[in-house]
Each structure stands twice: as C-alpha cells, then as structure tokens.
Image (cartoon, rainbow, N blue to C red):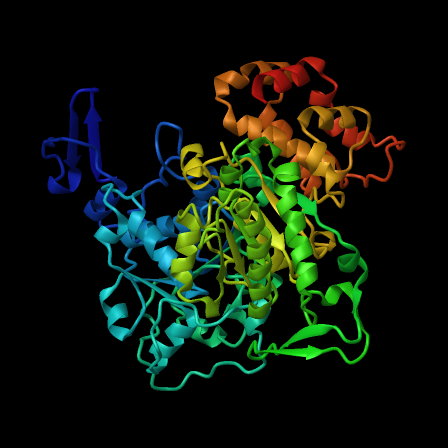
Length: 635
C-alpha cells in the first residue's frame, strides 16, 4: 500500500510514499480527520467502481436514526451481489418494512460512491410515484445530512428533457414507453384506471413492440428499481425494461411471484416476512372478525314482483326494473352479478355494532358523539365502482342513525369513495390519511397496494379475492405501525395502534391464503385476552390461531416495553429471551422451524398429545412466574 498513517490518539499523520524517491526520508502531513473510503480510492486511483463505497450505515437505535436491520441486510447483500457481477437482484420486504427507504439508500450510495449517474424508479401507479418522490425528498441518511433531493435532481417523468436533467427519474412503465417512443399523452397526477393488483393484469399475449426510432438511449440508466415488482413487468411491457439492458435491475416487493423469482434469476438478497416484521415491532399483528349472514352463507332469491336495480358493469349505468320471475343466486354472487342493498346494509350494521362490542370495547365512552365521530379509520373493499356507491349509501344510512340520536347530522366527509371516478384520488388518499373527519373510505383497488395510510385499523372485505398476491397486498394496508402521539391525533379516542382487524363479510379469510390466526368464530377475538388465551394453551388448546395470537400479544409486550423492564422476564426465560421465544413460534408457524426436522404437526384435537406444539410454548406456559409477570407488569 502506498499510504502510511500514524496516530497517537491525539494527532493523525499521513504520508503518500509515491511522492518520495527510494531511500529519500519520508515526510508526514497532519490530517484533521481520517480519509473516507471514497477519498482513499480517489487518491489511490483504484479502478473498481465500488472502491469508494464506505460501510453501510449502522442499524438505528433509540438514540440515533438509521436503517432497520432488515434494510441494513438488504443493502449489504445487494451491494455484495453487484460486486459479484450479478445484474439483477430481488428484495423481499414485508409491507411497512420500508421498501422505498431501502431503495433511496441503494440509489444514493450508487450515485454518491460509484460512477453511476442516473437511476430509474418504476412505479405501477401515479399516486405511488408521487409518494416515492416525497420519500426521496425527506431522505436524510446522506453523507452530509442534506436531503437526497437537495443533492440530486429527483423528478417524475413528463418528457425526454426530464430524463436529461435528472439523477432519479420516477415513472410508470406505461409513461416511460410513451416518452421512449415519442408519443403524446394527457399528463395527470391522478390514476386513469383501476388495476387488478397482481402480475396477471398485464400478462397479455400481445407484447408491446418497440419501433426503431427511440427517443432515449439504451445505456441511459445505470440502475433501474422496480417497485411492486410482482406486477406487470413480465407481460406485454417486458420489452421496455429489456431495452435498457446495460442497467442493473433491482425488484422490490412484499409478495414475490414465480415470475418475479424467475426474472431476477432467483437472486433474492433478503426475504423479510410479515411474521418477522411483527416480531420486530415493525408491523402490528392482524386479527380476523367474520361476519356471516344467512344470505352470505347460502345465497338468496329475488322474488317475482320485487323492485330491483340492474347495473351495467361496462359503464356503471343503472336501471330500475320489476323482477318478472323468482331468481336464485349463490352467496358468491353477492358482490358480482347481484347488488343487494338490503344485504349490504345488514353487513354494514353488523360491522357498526361490532366496533365497540367486539373489536375495540375499551374505546367505548359515555360520550356518544365522540364514539361515532372517531370510529377507527376503516377501509371497505368493493368489487366495482357501482358496488362502492351502494356501500357508501349503506354506510351513510347506518351511521346517520347514530348521529341523529344526539341531534347531529352525519359529517360531510365521514365516508367517501376513493376510486378513479371519485375525483382526484391522490387528494382523497391524502385526506383519508390526515383528516380526522374522514373515517371510512370505500375503494376497489386504488388503495389496495402500496398506499401508506398508517392510522388505518380496520379492513372490511365486501368482495372475494382469488389472487393470493392481491389479498396479501390488501391486508398490508392495515399493518403499519404508528407513534402513539401521532395516532391519537388521527383517532382521538384511541391510545395506540396495537393490531388491525380484517372484517370478512364474504369468506375471503377462509381460502387457502387466509392469515395464520384467522378464526372462523367472531367470538374468538371478542373475548380471548392474553390471560384466557394462556389458560387455553395450558389446557392443550394449541391450534395455529392460538399460537399466532399468543405470539402477537408477546410481540406487542416486547416492542412496547423498555429492555430494562423486560429483564425479569428474560431472566426467568434464560437462556432464551422473549424476542427469541416469539421468533421460534413464528418460525414454526411459517415452516422455518430450525428446532425440528419436520414441519409443525397439524392440530386436530385437544385430546391429542400435540407434543411439538406444547413444547414450542412451554417456556412461558409452564412457568407460572413468567405468566404472572407478563400479566401484571405489561397489560
């Protein structure tokens, strides 16, 4: 090495031996601070493009901001993958774990420490592009502490000139194609169409063909980051991405598909699951509340002579008619060919009654105005725009009754539709996120994927979902954590966000893709607190639902309490800790059980031995002192 450094703890001296002839006495210069890797690489004229790259910033602590552990792992492994010559990499992070923040870190480090000059950030909807632009604007984990967008030009794509003058270009792949081919399009920040929310949406047999005369050079981008990469990059738009074949490509998703794994050559640099995020306090755990009615379970009949409203799905037009003959319909048709206003109203009324009787009974107060004015922020999923209209009407009718009882009118913005036909969706999403008066939103898919509404606590499924990817994305809207003080600003009669509810009116949680812990009995979550749960576990009632709920309770305790306050519990659990105890349960439930050579055996009956399941929780359940400390000290 040509460089020599000497330090006695007070002074730091430096000498570049290349400045002196052989045998000539060396002279040292005093440095004010040690060179960074970037400065060393420049002085040494190293050729490796990664020579200037410093260590990844340390993981955040309570005293200092930084990367989460999962983000740290993602960046370290991503850069190692690049150094090994791989051009594609897949980052799988649970919803709420900070995929965009991770992308900002990767982009900043490549722009600042390598020869990379230009980054393309692909989003699948315009409102997510605006959200990403805001994240780049507030990102401050830079060398100087100055926001990313103050050091580098970050801009959403409108025309070719935006690419020329920007360091980070944000665009949908459709808009990129229009600019690439020189086409004109109506520029709007709003989203033009509702999407299905999974990669099958653009799996058309007809691929986009690129003409010869393209307006953007093939080597324009050094790095392409594909947000929500489980979606449409593998179908008809694939040629657009393949055109920029000199760039490194990074995919971000919480729900990888087989197409995603294949596209990125199975080079997954990190895989951080929802269970991992709940264990680490990044997300809150889900709970399921099932609403069943006779019609939703068995179907029904539209009788002869009844007044019905027929809706044309193509344009949403409505026509009132009289039914000529009895028509039976299956329960699966409730949100499809049949729109039954009475059935929708019944579900909405059931949901309303459950808010303070089953879901959040601790928030019920003697002030009825406060109770109904600040119900938990709720998102309804409808099948179509017209179906959403019917749901909005039913919600207005149902909740207006409660306000009328105290001589008030339903607040104007209490419930609103967020769909393509409802106006500026970006503004509506922002209002739902920030305005206290806006308590219930009804959407189709515009708020189903990627959109961040942290105060959201309840998701109501009024439509069935067949795509496991879309279902997981929709569930992810409710899992994000929020600081208590900010949460109380959004929901004044709440204290903290410790879980979220899936209110299932159509049986979506009873499919193969249901969440671990999705109970079919609504009473399960109404009555089963930690104390009663531990009693049932102690008596051998150890199905997945109970184990998952148990892990959720303990995750909340572990992440809410100060570590010194957990010392007694961890001492009683030694040589393990509460954190690793929870990890072990989640690993077993998700098939990552390192403590056994086979998957966790299925639970069939309380009378079975269930040895593996009992052993999994024995450190707490069989220790009366631990149970007592948990119940008295933290709940």
